Length: 250
Image (cartoon, rainbow, N blue to C red; front, side, top):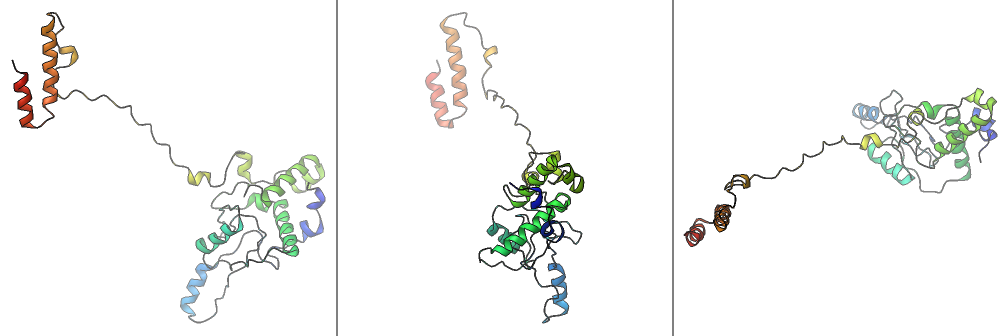
């Protein structure tokens, strides 16, 4: 279980760097792709003035690429690193180097966890601007774990709460605890219910209420049969219709 000293220490609260020597662990990750394209036209064979950056493999699990130069980040949530890498390559081409497939080392893990702890502790995660609201981030991810721990510690330790605050999850989680990332983007407007099917009116012949009651025994039944035959005849070929009517005629 994470304790106060896991957050309030020199390595985390005051010195954790982002980016570290291993790359960005959280956002905002600058995206110079549009500027690169503009400069490429003017400086044809010159090196790109803003080379792609490196995103560490120890990250939040949220796409923290800045989209418009105002600090607003993408916000798409991923539950595994291969999916995040594909997203960076396809949705933000040129933003970041393709990460190596080498396993995460001890030092990268340490630097990454400290940087993300500091981001949560100091309110960066809580107040960051996203185009797509990430909510808690990936379920079981580092930001969710650290925000849970900080809120628990703040509830137990008044000194910690007075120094860092009591809310570390994003604001949406205070307003809607059941919020799921991407839910609003996938939601579709509710379609009105289809009207109940109405029975089709008879195409020919009198309605049942218009038919004479059976006051004369078999005569009434003959009339009903003839009405049904008239409906049947109207749906068949002319030649066959005439034959049926001739056979049924008195």
